[in-house]
Length: 239
Image: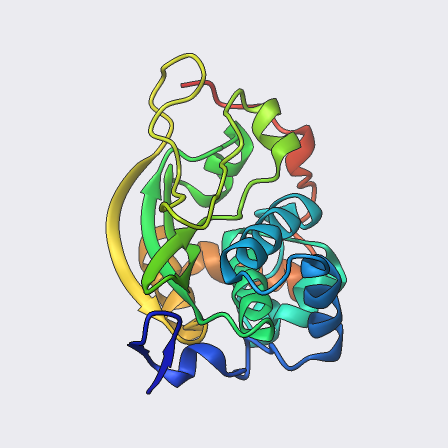
């Protein structure tokens, strides 16, 4: 265990690279360094800069691959410039660690978040299992940051982009601009030092069906993507 800031103990795992959260990747370190340039010594300011960079520079795409550890690797996400909530959380976590900020990933099951008609039909549910977010250790406390949805996508879905100030938890809004229910947290899966890939895939199989998940994997293996899927062109679900 180590101590950061106020002297409260922090598990050293949250500062170290892992097999998936590769904060020692040269490209990840360079991306982190250029993002926080000029931020000074403030860990809060650095974390805020990293959050907005990942939120808006890495495009949200729920149809990126999900079944291998490398699909979540920070360097892989950075190279592709797109990913769903967990790959984006993996990258943000890696960037925090690259800047010396303790960071870990958290997971929850959520209902009705920025869905499209086609996405709900694809997964067969409006429950999104193992949604990912990040916790930064700042000023002695763990602060939640959720970088999944870029600002342009939020505007298309009539939802305010999620802000982060490094002081208060940043989690999804319960309502959209029309005061319609937008997000409901259903179950909490806790926090992790690394991405629990096997647990995620197993949970998806239980929630969406083994045959459905196996079909997705076959499409990725055969075509490199889910066929006929372009999230930006899909029908937005309102309310």
